[in-house]
Amino acid sequence: MSIQARNILIDIRDTLRVADLFAAVTIGSDADSAQIPRAEVNLIGMDESNATDSPTGKFYTLRAKVCVHVRCHNTSDAFARALDLAASACESLLTDRFRTNMCRDLPTGKATETGPLKIEPKVKKPYLAVTFEIRCNFESEEAQ
Image 1: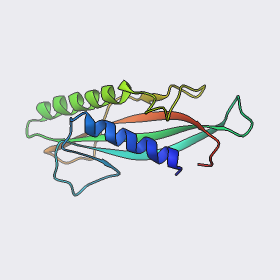
Image 2: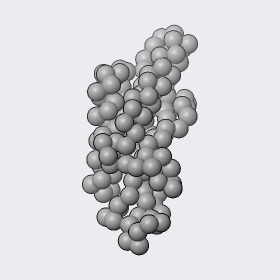
Image 3: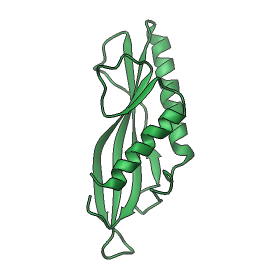
């Protein structure tokens, strides 16, 4: 992973921390954490394509998944809480969609885009997890 991609992941983590929605925000899974609610930012992958305006440059799309964990004994309350936190997290991530000028709108997509919210099916009660994908587009001449 390039320095630029790592810095984008750090910016996503830091943005979620500053939003003050979660007791903890980490890059990577933290299955041992007892801090709830928490968010985990996991790298899914990087897509690469040739830049249209530069013979040596490349367009990159960093794809990450944000997983929001909550705990509640009432299932409907847990769903409402998790969906509300995830929606607020999406909103805070799109406040600076250029990720402090590391990302930009490209033919491959907007600087930062979020995907639909999904319920993670393999989480045991009384816990619940909701995920969404975040895609960040940037241009670089550095090999990823």
